[in-house]
Image 1 (cartoon, helix red, strand yellow):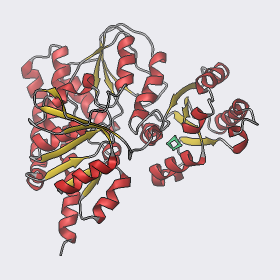
Image 2 (cartoon, protein in one colour):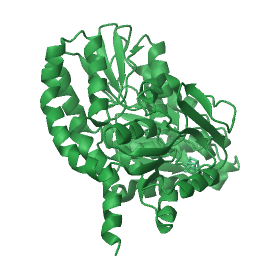
Image 3 (tube, helix red, strand yellow):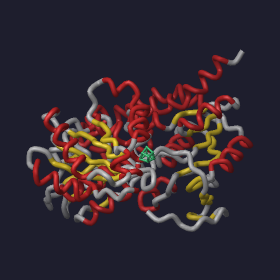
Image 4 (spheres, protein in one colour):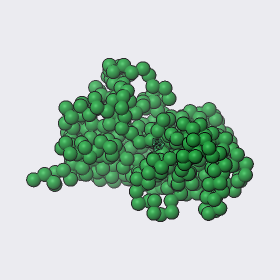
Length: 425
Ligand code: SF4
């Protein structure tokens, strides 16, 4: 996705929403982090990063204790001989893949994940995946994508991973709904039940729980995005004939209702059937949310760019939790995927795209927000300056979508405020 030239001056993208475009030093994860949640979602997949010790350290620290649970990810570390071009990196890679597949016969799909070092030495992982596939397919499918920091930011790793699967999805022009973006299994089950009640189907979730059960795609496929960071995947699916149903994202009660309604309208679901299906979970969610709404109302929020979830989160925080938005930062704003959300932001919301971290920190310090949503690198230093923070990575790892998670989502923001209150003497 191309960034527009840096203007540093607010540009109006809709009547009342100015966007501050900045470029400079950034504080974000690279796309390798996506492996941490993707390997939990697709239970027959293995992610082999072809990178350096830095990449291995990153994954180990992001995955925390998971590394002790025989995880389905690892790093083929490029040694000095590979980097100096003395060893044939392709031969070494084949050897590592042989060993891995022999040791782990449960692997059905293997992703070769590119990194900064593999890109810099121009190791052609796409070719390697093709070569290895001819040896191991159909028992194991071998795909490739890049999670490097040069090309991808944080959740874009999921976009790149799903994008690598699009060309191998089976073709079918039958009508069907494809929910795109990884969701916790429990959330997926809740949505499936709601779609069933409304008579919407067949419904496919992408990514699937088993990478071997790939959903079909074609002219009858309607795409409903569960995650807002899938720009390239959506475009590839559209190029295979699918149609995008633009919608707000299923965060909070309002977002979930709008999201389900988008699907219901595409399936011509009767409004009474729709209302009956959503009534019980909406009622439950309203009661559960009320407690946190009281804690959050009138508080100021500042969101640093990180996961691309910032705009839907800001919409939820302002409209359903009564929070004031100081600034909403996004690494990129893809209008195709974001317009429905931007339209729901309160008038005058300050949006920023890209980052110049020092300038943004200055704005944040000046505004003294009650809660700052940011990455781990900024969180503790800001806490030390007396500001309450919410780590944005938790928003990607926790189930936050759908009605039954609306209160949990609000609680994630109320918790740091409550902790600060308790610790203040
Ligand atoms: S892929 Fe690049 S940014 Fe990510 S850990 Fe490896 S070297 Fe660092």
